[in-house]
Image (cartoon, rainbow, N blue to C red; front, side, top):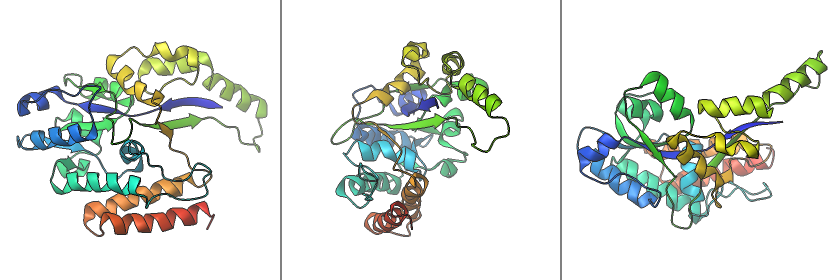
Length: 274
């Protein structure tokens, strides 16, 4: 049964923009705007520009906003060597080469949210979990979020989904069912929404998102071009092939064309059940 969902927004440090002498992001921003700002922020020598690791999920809004997908709609054909995917992979790779994009480890952070909390970077893409993370770990750091930037063809985001299931072999089916019904209930999901951790699958609870940053992030899940990061039974392997492709590019082991051709073969094998 559906439990909750999440998505990404553009997270940033206002002080990094002030240091660079540039305007803060807004809902009209594109990925080109992100790159330009990241270059200027990096030039201050105080902050990294844009933080992103070799992660399929963080790359997804780039790819989807160029009309790309990781597989065909019927989940039978991998689409990682298409121009839509490779153009945005090259865009990200170029940002990394010019040092406007940094990985969390490059600035001494475990993940990009931590890099924001430690004031190591000016921008990243993260989800509603940033709300509680910042309150609990970096309560004195001012941060903001805006709608995910748009790409060459559309504005798109990625949706993460979570569900609760019952093991068919359970010795306690009634208790397991009761627990599942409770966890996915409107009452329980409503409490989860208030924490900023994730969003309710009950449509009537959409207005429970009240934190301004959280609302800006959540809005990305309703964009027309937004996709769920699901490609059938072998989704994990398909998504992993994207992450590994980005990692090879960042390490300089392969060009974008070479790496995503390899990813295409890996993802197709996964979709074929091999």
